[in-house]
Length: 341
Image 1 (tube, rainbow, N blue to C red):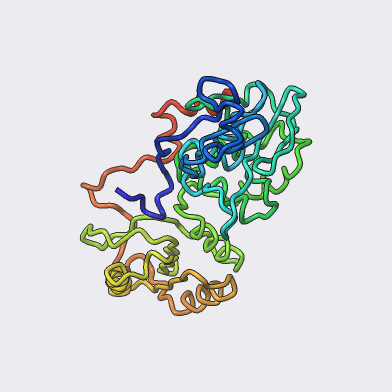
Image 2: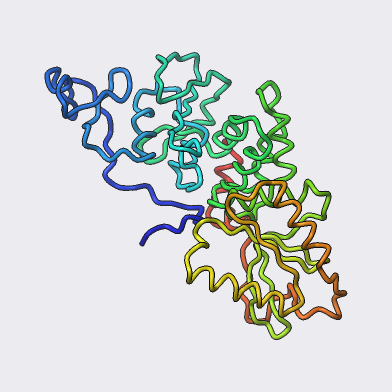
């Protein structure tokens, strides 16, 4: 089944090809390396030209040339662990170089398909996942939060890692708060963590929520189930202001199909029928457009007192109690792993 574009977790594809050196069992001969069937992916490393050229293959090829003390970090380490939104693209048609961190005073030749960091990298922050050395989740998130240098990217990084169920904001905050002094970009990471939540499900939800907050409005609930008074689920709004009774949604390109649009209209009407105001922001809208739409919708909102509302956040008795991300990480045994690196 094809993965939904807003699903935050992805499976690593099969058929990945490990790079090899000339003259090894898996590698080409010198003559073969000069022919059309092989391609040099990094200094001294070769892969068959006919391999599948996906993002995970790109990561694997650069990981092969690491020294013993080094690791893949940043977006690439998170993608290797299954975090879908770290797709290694530049937002246009380009592909990001794989970020490598060396550690141990090691050195490595420059190559266009990777970047090299020589920041402090203790052995405790290096691990091996399915055959390649990667930075721990905290270190990979920390490096990616600082890579672009914008608050939006930093918040999106931690929130999309949380969406992929790899770490919580609380655990990441505990990692950054002590001991990170001396690293470039620490103040930015701390500002981002103060804004971040565990409940965002896509980068554009994060973008929309930060616009909402920039308007000075109370922080919205995100992906919170809303019910009618009989216990029927009305929906999970991307953003929800329970005081104003305001629902906000980001509708991406996948909402353009006729059937999806029909469901969206019906959902919007269901919210309105229960006294909730509604706005949507669509792909291509600017921050200015989104901000103006939020403010206009909030002015229209009814601000009903609790006794006059036709909706509730109280789930019906049969509704299953949903685990928090923190509880899930404890159940999976990941909290110990994340707090002991």
